[in-house]
Length: 221
Image (cartoon, rainbow, N blue to C red; front, side, top):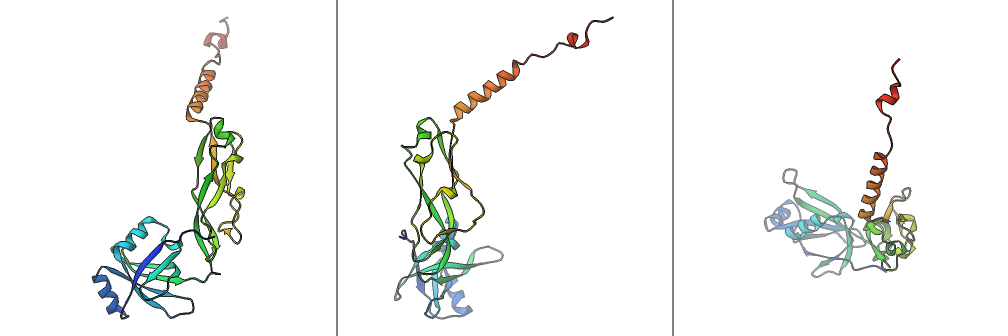
């Protein structure tokens, strides 16, 4: 079942064209348009500060939002474009697309690491190293998984690794990149043990006997 989808609040924009868009920007808003679905395009305004915060948080174009506009039903949307000022690189317009429940979209889904306390490799003194906290999947808009589950109890020994192929994907979801089985996490030896092992290697190398110069040359005739 889908997880909690973040709300994106907007206002319906009265008037269209460049004049209305300029007026919105002077009022501290970013004009936009909502298109797609079975209804007419809806011109909107989003507060500049709200949009900037969303953009800085990252993954704005791959995040599904629940768009809330007064006087209209809530609708699921995804950003298809953010136009920016060529000099200041600030947002000047955005395009949002309405999604049907059957629409396929790319989204980053978070990973829930479970059973860390029961992990045999960690019980043996290993340290969990997380390589990825989320992965990009192709999912159906009406059935977005809340999280992907990684069962750490499957890691038996220090050095064991969980790859993407070890994760059971929800029905209908598939990876964006299908030919790469990347690492999700692993259990490595504690850094102290690694340092001790390195020191032992250095000592062993120092103890290797070397031939004296006199022995190499032999006795003079």
